[in-house]
Every structure is written in structure tokens, then in C-alpha cells.
Length: 250
Image (tube, rainbow, N blue to C red; front, side, top):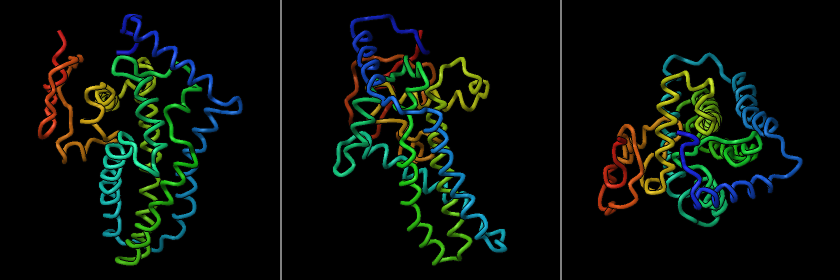
């Protein structure tokens, strides 16, 4: 997939735009510090929350799949309605995602070219912390409605999910020769996310980055194998039909 595009005038413009964005990355920026901060939010949440569990019952652990499904729905909604539509006060999410991230990384050019591009792929670590803090009210409600263990388990699962989202997204933007793609499931998930980077699909399909549960539920799954872009033919009516804008490779 990566590197198969001929150097047309359009791809040369995109490469120039990419270089300009990379040059804007501050000199103080550390990609490894960024990654450590992201993972650190999850680790810190687990370290602070786990000791507060007191003799959890087996049924309490049903919180884990419930929290995963809840987080998956939130991921789908935020990606579709905030990251692809400019809505105050979340305009910065759109600005960083649609006109920058999607412009740089396409179906045929998903891979980052340097570690400094982690800034163009990952959410700032403070943003990850903010998302985890947004899960606190839901965890508090769960704790009040059921018991404290359920609240802490909900918060820990939410934090791990957010970190998993970030690590998954980073993995999908690594070169295809990377060792992580020895795992067939990860290759399949990368393909799922790469289809979202087809311009005709990015506002219609594959909004889940982690697992495509909500995409399946809401009918936004572009699942055809071996896609090539067809630049015309989608009427946009009703539920999204993948054949309207992609076709099988020959």
C-alpha cells in the first residue's frame, strides 16, 4: 500500500504540505516523551484506581465489557460528528484531523516518515488526560448506582481504552514492513482504518479506530476487500453503500 502512488503534481503538493507541517513541530517536541505521556496517563489511572477496589465480586467485572462498548460508541460519535465537522468549542479537533491529518495520510500513503510525525498522529498527552477526566462523571454515576468497585473498574477500563485507541492509531500509521503487522488481526484493522482515509469515505465510513463495533451497529462499515478508489458515483442517499465509491482491484 504505502509508497505506491506515482509522484503526480497532486502528491508533490501533499508532500510539500507534509514537510511544512513537520517543520512547524516545535524543536522541544519529543516523540518518545509524547508516547510516554500518553501511556503514562493509563498507567497512572490504574495505579491510583486499583488499590481502591475492595473484594470485587465476579459480577462486578461485567463492567469491563460494558465500559468497552460504551467507549466504542463515544469514539464513533466523536470521530464522526466532532472530528469531521467543525463545531465550536471543539473546532480544534476538526482542524487537526480533517484538513491536516487526512490531507497528509491517504489510503495509499498511511505511513509516517519520521518519529516527529507522532505529533501529527497522536492526541496530545494532556488531551488523553482530559478524555479520561471526562469519564470520571460516568464512573461516579456507575459507582453510585451499583457499587464503588463498578465505578473504579469503569474508570480504569475507560483509561485503558483511550490509551489503546492511541496505540492502535499509531500502529496503523507505521510502515507496512513494521513487525506489528505480523499479527493478522492488526493488519486487518489497519486496512479498516486505511479505508477511512479514502477521501470519498472519510465522512461516511469506518469511524471506529479500535474495534469496528459501532460501525457494524450503525451501518458505516466499508468492508469490501482489495479496494481501489473510484473518484465518482456516490449518490449519498440512505445508509452508506461502499460500492458507490470503491471497486475491487484488478
